[in-house]
Length: 271
Length: 320
Image (tube, rainbow over the protein chains, first blue to last red):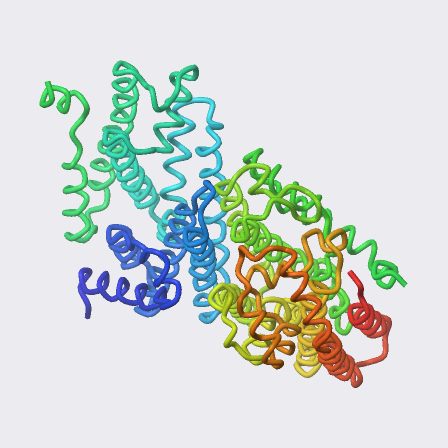
């Protein structure tokens, strides 16, 4: 019987095997496999009454979709020269290829229900991605809900296999928390953050993202921190409601939570 | 007779399909909805849904079941067009701005992925596992075909088998599967849907060869791009492969790059035409067409069969 760590390793290895396409990987960067997401999937599916093979395949197919969507995020907008264009062309096709594999694997298992469930997840993710990208949200709460759903729609489909809404809440808060942390780091490092751009458009609609003044930057960071702290509290709440959670996941979540330092602390340290 | 006239008896079902296509891309996001509709309203021959419906006529024709297959296949085709326009950096499709041109690559990627998801949601209304095994395999093959096409660009060492394998994946397989899945949704015997698959496959091969010939015989106005553009882009098609059998012509062709001037392309087109490569390619296309028609021979006589034969013949004779 494999323990959680071994199961995560097996799933990750099999994903790497599925996405290994020598020609694609010659030109595009090897897809990033988020081990936290694999751990999350394995931990949820461990509580669903499934055979080992099904567990593995559900985790693999969900991750293939995640990788496909992440790969398509890398498709750029600007005009490129011939060599860079080839990279972009293959990035588009790699995403299509990975999502085709999800369908092929589940079709091979005659699992029509799961094909549909995950397709609905893809649909929801893209609905919210375009909303954030278009800066269509009318309020910060709506924007943050879209960010949350971009991160969690797929994984919530898996958690819905359990008859326990606490898992869905836990999943959604964990992935939302991680994403906001990532966006905050991007913003602090001066990079382009689609979430901060949308936030800026909502809070300071008349000024440029790239030229945000110090006061505006503080407001943006504090707003983001509020949601990070709120998701942290929710995570703690739902973790206490899920005593059967495996130790590996519990430790990992604690580590993620502990990574966050609200802006006040940063500014004091910087000051 | 025009293509649309041949299947006019399907008009009410095709209208139903058009309506379902619109309903299916009715996204919550206004931009996603607008972008999807933009593509839908740009038209298209809807040849895949037509093949699905006609194949369905060989079994128990229930439009509500068959419609899901027809709409899903058209959506898959649409999603691939949106992604292809990003791949090709294309500004126009069917004379209208592409999604990536009207908005940008990001919007195109989200729209393509959204349409793909909607197509899978819809096709899962069909509970037959073989439908999904066939379709999923096709989607992966299609994608591999596109990757191979990029890999083979300006590869003048490739042979005719490489070309046939590529156009099978690129074009023929989705037409073949349209016929097969329409028939399966109508509960036909295995033999019948296999014959319809082969019919679609051969028609698709013939169609693509003619498309590749037209790249050299069409005018810029007819093609919507300069003649020989496929060759300039590095796509080595059947007429090129035939023409390269002549060592002198081959020497000229292998020099082609994306930067080659149109005047030089025109000179090479003349060489290709003079080599007899166009006639030989059309002969191969005819052979595929005859194979397609052969596969219909043993099928029951009905209006759908006659229409499939007519469509195949029109495809074989098409100028554009």
